[in-house]
Length: 457
Image (cartoon, rainbow, N blue to C red; front, side, top):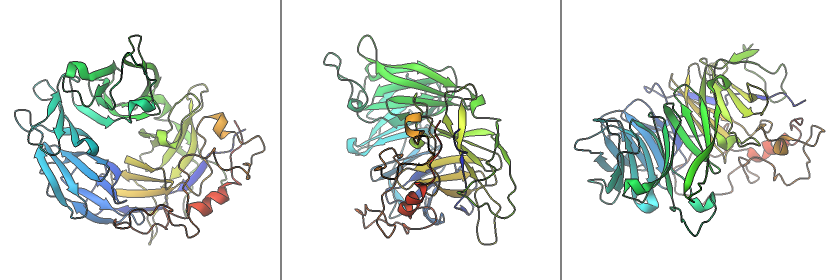
């Protein structure tokens, strides 16, 4: 029998002043958190204290609709058609232009490649056309080229995949583009295109229509995933077609019933956690899918881990078990507790955004009530991911303490004796303290976890 799922309460949370709804969370180049709201500005928050320490404003007149970070750049796009590159240190716009197709068009998604001097802009559908606009950041007055027939509705996602050589086999007869652009839309289409090809007919390398409006998408390990507006999930494998071109094949679908309106029994006892006073929960019921989070782990068959949420601000981390439906099973419960006079504990409303800090073993979440919460994973048992080769502890319920931790998740963080990060290569960035309630102390917690491993499947 496998051990009970882990359980933890929010390490810390803060309400962002005058900023209800946190719609996305991204790490900035300096190590801060960039928060997007339904507002014409972005909030900069400290990853340790979760307190707002600044704003990026003055670049948009309409609400910010997407944010992307690449290398040392923070880019945002807005409903006003504005595209802005921000100077985080100076807290002001460094580049500011309008996405124009005869007139300014609302921006819905962004992707950036600083090394290619390229910012890629996805738009709402206007006059029956939605556009992917490619701008040279050195001269962004007009698009260098555009793709206007790949999608027929609002473009909900753009991102650049790693070099194709890292996830496809070589073929001398049909060389592949070096970098691919992943795009998705409310038209149900998910596509891979050559980001450097101006001829749209030549640019699209593979496309599949899921038949459902796609709200978000992403890439992991030679696969792409899409999430529908109704909280179902699909995964495609990137492979070679018979003509040696690319294809999106092997579609695997996970219906919304795997994620929504499920009731979970909380562990009766859990050695990892002492709940806040007044907490008497014994069950939680999921109301929505928060996000698909492959960085937490993949099942043996390649299914990504997911996180579902409740309307009260609790979360359930899930892994794919491969058993009869519902095949997604709980790996951990991340719970919000009642606030005290000195500390807030999580959310009280629907969770709208999530960022998994792999290196520091932390999860950050934002909710409709404007609360930013941090959840430390370092003190928890290792999450079951749905792969017996990784989850199996040998049958005695205890990890081999003589191992070199090669089987640990990639989120294990190496720290020195003081708990500070080993990598301090950028001493000039404006970072908060690295040893605190959410980040840091990873080495100590990791040692404690060695005696808390799960029973095998």
